[in-house]
Amino acid sequence: MIDSAIAEKLVSVCRGKSPWLILSHNHPDPDSLASAWALQHIFYRKGGSPSKIVYGGIVGREENRLMNSLLKIGAVHLQAGHFKKYSQIALVDTQPGAGNNSLPPEIKPKVVIDHHPLLSASREATFHYVAEDCGATATILVELLRILEIDPPPLLATALYYSLISETQHLGRDVTKRDIDASIFLFPRAKHRLISRIQHPYRNREFFQQLYLALEKAFTYKTVVVAPLGEIHHPGFIAQLADILISLRRLTWCFVHGRYRDTLFLSLRTTHTRAKAGKLLRKVIGNLGSAGGHDMMAGGQISLKKMTPEEIEDIEGKILKQLFKELGMPEEFNPSPLVNLSPPA
Ligand SMILES: [Mn+2]
Image (tube, rainbow, N blue to C red; front, side, top):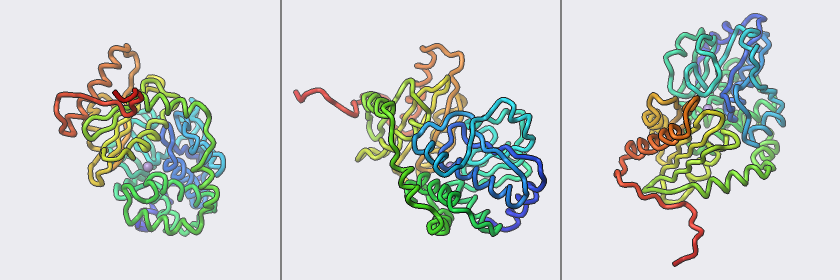
């Protein structure tokens, strides 16, 4: 549990009437949405300061769109003038330099709250709290709410609980005692019927089309299932597909990548509970881009701006080769398709 001195420091930082810009991931997942919303609540209740929750990219997954609208979170797309209008910036579930947010490099955030490994630029924030022993940033926000004696309204509790179970696959992945304690606190406060509606959304045809193409492209090699998707409809699909493919029996690693608007998005999953997937993906990507993650899951991105199709293909090939090398797999490469529709010989 976070100690009260840390919570009091956050309160002292947010006192005053000037408005805050709370920045989540570019393509926000439930954890960054719920955490941003909880921080907005703390700012309002303890500092009396208004704030806006923004993201740089798109809310791609149907579940996340539903979460934003059904729970009335009110996260909006970042506008060009926002950084001029709001002088105080807070980053949640991400950090300056993490590569998955739209913070311009010359702007220093005042507040950083995250559960990914600490990046050096975060130390320059007036308040930074980065706890790797939390499976979700939402856990940190729950602890802050509790220590500040703010009882979260039902919809906020619902968002935080949904974030916890979605980020940790129902408290099964990268989860610690802090997450369990937070979930016990949230459980009686959350509206579970709403969570069920979010978890079982109606999907448009685009999703099935994308899934079909993905399964066609996926292949397995040794203990890895790989899906090189090429162009995709939205970046959120990468993580979604990785979560599906890692369920493939007997395989222990899953690697998915796809391109969206000049960026290559990558997702890595493993069934090994202590695998340091985040570290591994950072090694694989090297100085080509950025990555972050935990033991069993990681994500990254590489800018493809001004690259020719050949250069892009080259990068994708390099990354894959590097991944196999890091996983200690032999040089010779004989993949087999995940789905084989040809009739038996
Ligand atoms: Mn998170």
